[in-house]
Length: 323
Image 1 (cartoon, rainbow, N blue to C red):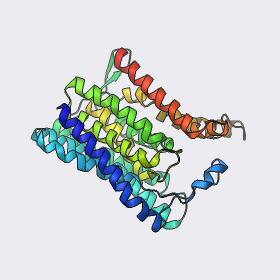
Image 2 (cartoon, rainbow, N blue to C red):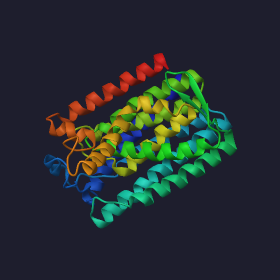
Image 3 (cartoon, helix red, strand yellow):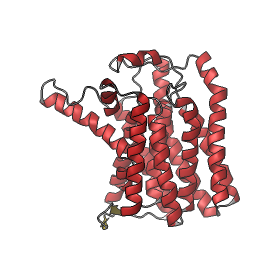
């Protein structure tokens, strides 16, 4: 099993890196670049026109690496793996639609928020129906660190759809500076690889290490200074991936702990907007999401990424030993 996992990791990372090497020049020549928002830090304007939709590299890289699963997983495991990958891919498809609209209209605004949420709700609902019919579905929520269990029955469907929408969009918000979302997600995937292996959950381990490899291969070009952005294509794919991994390991709420960076970023936006409205124009942070606040405080992008990954690793270790 170890050799196969290493093979999946290697193929995912190498394929992603090779695809980047081939297609980044193509994206540049076709001027498939991302316009930078005027409201962001002023020095981000130098990134205007950086190629985007680079998430396609690791979407393809992970798919190619998962072909190895045919050599060591059973038929039911293979079916489960590809259904889970299909859900993750469809999550990324929402990002592809969003990015394509931005590029076509030469704006930084893609599809409307309600359209995105509606698409995500439909995708998550269909996935749950297929998953439950094929493999059964654990409708118990485990509360991290307290050892408590909540049998929520039908409400699990509503919880999962809402959790998927919120988490995937939180990962999207995290993707605001070079290498942040890919680095944090790589660390989250290491946690889920270990957790899945300890549970004997081979499908979860394979998917997690495949996405980890894709993130590593992508960081070759996405680390500061980034030569390509993943776009909503990549961030929504990664959001779908980590939610899927939490479902496979039957512990969705552990993602709130391990992926705390995602949720801090999202809540910083919610708090900023809410406080701005009730205080009639005052702000809690210099800018949101939170990584932009730290930028305006003088932190380098590299420092922000290092701190975010460190927090993720620490929370992963705490979850591993004390859950």
